[in-house]
Length: 76
Image (cartoon, rainbow, N blue to C red):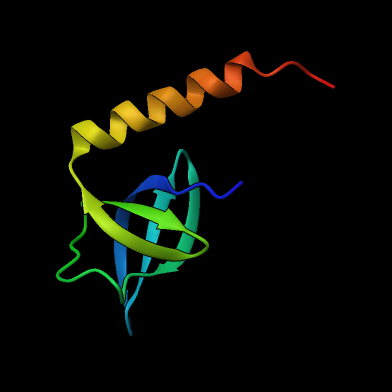
């Protein structure tokens, strides 16, 4: 299953890269596919690439759904 996850841009690193926060996890990703990304923007991230920018409300709704789905999983 492929899943793209919203993340907030915390720092622009140059050369089309940015440091993002994914629920407390910091990661460097490419933002080369999205124009004019700024610190504080929310982007949808898939396999190390920002695919699009989304607004903060949409990002929070998606993250809430992901947290809800994770809480429903049963331990194996």
